[in-house]
Length: 320
Image 1: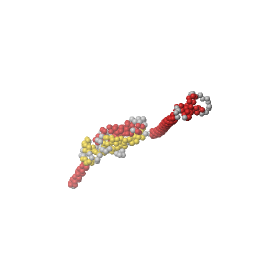
Image 2: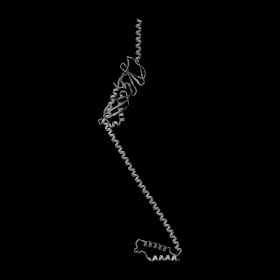
Image 3: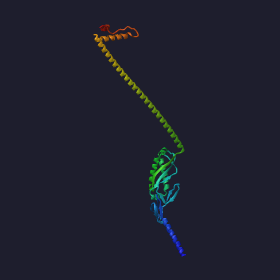
Image 4: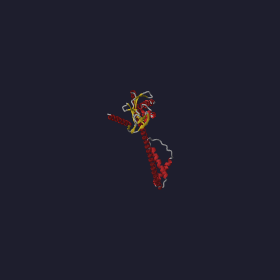
């Protein structure tokens, strides 16, 4: 009987030792860590792999985490990976007093597990409330139109403010993204009407610009056509003048040749060429005067004896 009791006691002791040892072995996954307290005081931070603690004397510190479903729970394991919080929509008042619904995504990472555990009592709630209040402050400084067109600016301001505020919690805010900005229905209808009016205005401007450009091109075409016509007329006049000049030169050369021939012929006959030519001109002039449409008395401004003398010279030339 005593042997049986002794065996039971040994079995119980062995079981207690095994349980004690198993409780003292902590396996930490990659990208996770644990905070170990000894007698209620921070002792060390466990790395990934197999770690040994002293049960009863040492224990893993628990902290509050937020699950993907949004529920809160307590765990002794701290995730060191980048995490994302998807916040519900919240109402924000812009600078021009427009109530707008905005929801945001927050990407952050725990870089100092000890601060994340000891510097803040509920890290997920603290980050959520800080994000909401910061978002209200940033959007409250901007008008609605600026809010809708300046998402990158809002994201940058939020990230800077949150990263600075969460630094003491051992948290690094990597980025903040606004998912939706939803103004009231009445504002959306007004904005649609404004957009339609703006599109119509742009269409009218483009049409007017096209008509203006067409008129400019037409006027430039007409101007160029007139310039070309004037240039053509100028070239034609130049060519005509050059032709007339050449014709006169040729005519003068022909007359000079004819006069030289006549002078040579008259000189061969022993007569004076000058008298001969003058007589010919007198005869041509009288012919033109006598050939008018009306017969009138004509007073000749020259001496008839000169004409008769010239005619006599022509007679003597032919008589010879």
